[in-house]
Picture 1 (cartoon, rainbow, N blue to C red):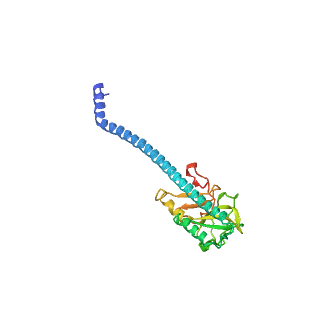
Picture 2: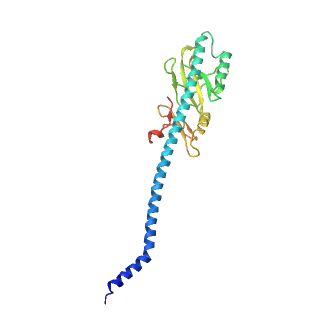
Length: 242
């Protein structure tokens, strides 16, 4: 015998009374999870955008720092070029006053840049006051007279520090001396970048216009002097020296 309609309705009403809170709770949980997922997605997007903005700021700061460094170097090389032109009868290898001038210019860079001269073959030569490692340093390349040229990282021997040469061909040669060179201490340059990078996992890489790595902070063995792999978006590429 089938239950009457009022009896069936009573049973259904009792089931709804029992299951109703669970149905409502399930709906609320689903809504809360949806809100959590949306909030997490928005937060991730904000974090990603913040990271991109931070990278752009670091890249701009490193670029400005490098431009300022190169501008200062160019000015110092012009000073040496002018000195050579103003002393046509003086051998730079023998003039103590020139050594004192280079020492003052070196101090003005807080020890970051050593100035010197190189021969027609681009090999470093000794002048008064120059550090011994400059004698016979590997060849740098000369541009047009009076033009500054950014080179690639060099070192005299595998156990010697890396240095980044920026050279200027003299307007007039002085014997076998063809140009002035600024040797940037790469280790000290990397130390300057420590204050710019996003600690602790961030890194800054500086490369030449030919994509040769000058310095990476923090230092990674075997990276200096190697080619940069352009496998990232434009904003990830390092500040390149002009």
